[in-house]
Image (cartoon, rainbow, N blue to C red; front, side, top):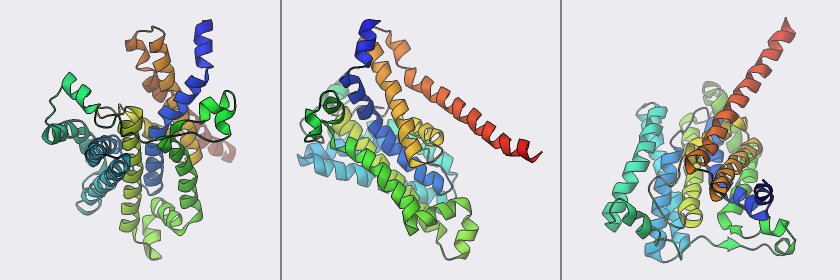
Length: 317
């Protein structure tokens, strides 16, 4: 037990929480913006998978991490706009579009990996794709002054560039939603599209913008997974983080700060599962911990929201 507590209170454990939370946070911010626009993008998982593959491959063939990061972001944005075309112009149910993207994110990326690299499925694929970005990862950043502070320096310094950028995006997204005309239009379209249209707001343009933003954040999340977290692409490497982001968006009440805190909770749960596996707990018991926390968190959120909704009715009577 003492070994467990020393492990949980170590700076390495807290470091891993921030590291694991970053891709979830990117996807959560994308989910928040589309929710503000009045719909849901459940295809975040598939967008992250395609972005992870494209970032990994382009960085390998270009010989530098920056083109790979750009490719991952462009992939996320373009595919999200394609989703918007099917949903907004062809009137396909956006939930079904998201499901299709998620299914393609698993089988489609494997197919593309085979076509582009001629790597076959199985252990050969896992070992060979690991070489794609092993020496081309997004760089880690040492923060001056903070790096020399005992304990705190080992927690906050030395993260990937995208880890810091994820938390900066929380501030930037909040400013965009509540301090700009674009954010006002997004929220107006989400609350009442007819009223927004009556004052000259292009509802379809705002919805495309929200979809593009979710693709942008998914691109960063996918790039982080293959070019920093795992240092290479592998099948289904996103491992449900897109769905966890949807839960984080709901638990955070659709707000950037709440979504960040919920992402950290899920990051804590995943870090805890990894640590439990490291001390000998059966992986079949440790692996479901993040998903169990997701379900428990959503239940708590639903119960608290139901109670808040019931209070005005009680007071009115």
